[in-house]
Image (cartoon, rainbow, N blue to C red; front, side, top):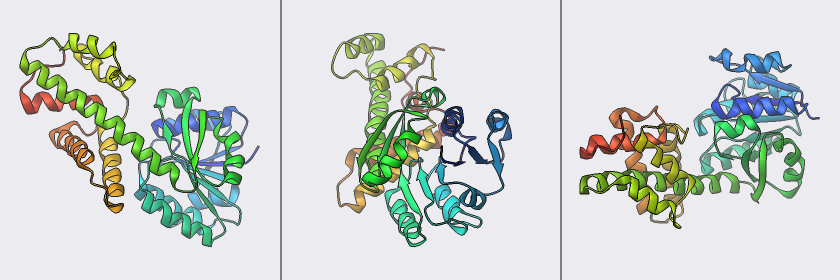
Length: 298
C-alpha cells in the first residue's frame, strides 16, 4: 500500500475519493483548508493532516489533486510550498481535476525536469458515485504509469480507462463535458420553446424517453418540470469553466467551435442572471427569465 497524499479532500468529489482510498487501507495524508468539517471523518478514520503540499511531497509516494481547475492545480504544484518545492525523485502527482490541456502540458514539463511524474486522470460521474467508490476515471499516461496507478484508482473508481498517452485524459474529459453541456443546454431551450408554443412538456419527455434522443442527462433536466432541480449535482459555474477550457482547446487546434461557443455563452448568461452557484438544471430557470416561459412546477 503506497502512502497517498490528497489535495482537495474537502470537495464534493475529493471527499468520496479520499474516503475510499483510506477505507481500502492506503495510508492517507491530507492538506486541510477552510472547511475542516468536510474532512473530520477522514481524520477520525486515520488520515493525517499535512501542513502544506510540500509536506505531502516529502511524505508520500503518490499525491492526488482534485480541485476546481488549472489555476488551483498550478498553485498546488508550483506555488509557494507547492509539491515541486519539495518533490523528491519518483514522486507521482495525479491531477483528477478538470484542467486545461495547455496548463497540464506545462506542468508535466516542469515535473519531468524535477524527476517527478505528472499524470492526468480526470473523473466522470457525480459526488454520489464518488462516495460509493464508483467513479469513472480517464487516465492519460504511459503504459507503465497506468499499470502502477490502476490498482490505486480502483479504490474509488468502478471504471479505470486508459484513454491514451500523457494529456489524453484532460482532452477527452473536455470533449465529454462539451457533449454533456450541449445536451443540457439544448434541453432547457427546447423546454422554453415548447412551453411558449403551448405544447405539453410532459409529452415531449414521454416521446424522448422512448427513443434514441434519451439519455441520463435529458432525464436529469426533465426532473425540473416537477420542480426537482437536483437531478444533476454539478455547479453551473464549473460547467461554464469547463466549456471555456473546451473552446480554448478547439481554438488552439484551429477547429471552429460554433456549438461550443453557443453552449459556453448559454452558461455564461445563466451565471450572469445569478445562477452560477446553483446546479446545471438551473439553465431552465435562466430560460424562464429570458423568455417568460413557465416551465418549473412551483
